[in-house]
Amino acid sequence: MELVFTVVGMYLIDTAGRKKLMAVGSGLMVLFALGISFSYANNYQLRMLIFVMCFTSCFAFSMGPIPWIMIPELFPTYLRGRATADLKQTESDIKAAEAELARTRPCQGACHRHQGRSRSAGQRAEAALIPSCLLALCE
Image (cartoon, rainbow, N blue to C red; front, side):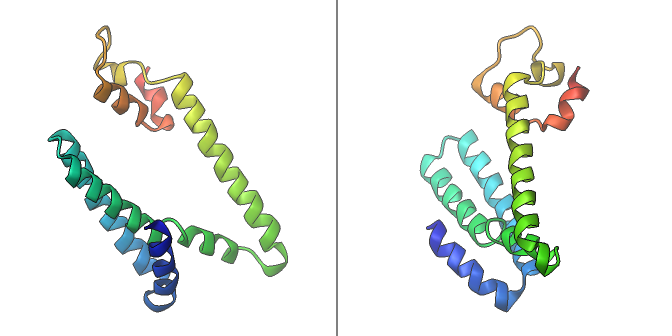
């Protein structure tokens, strides 16, 4: 499914344009993410699966391939290969460091709301989703 929509996205980049494709894809991803959370909260498993598939499809034609196309265009031709590789490596390193930070130092009680009480799975997931830049605010 993701492969099909990536190919669709590659075609639409030329016809619709990158900016419009990113805006539409991001907007639909927000709607489908809300649908996923609603389905999860109400235990609608089939609906949640459909929303996850739709979210993945929107990612595949917008946020997935477009950054790989846009990043090389930022650099002059003689630097493109090296600069793109360095930029993508830096992005991966930042994501890995953020994941490690969130794993080793979760926000204490999700900003003190659950301090002193045991957390449910949903509360632990909420604490894991807090961006690492906000962790300092929780202390």
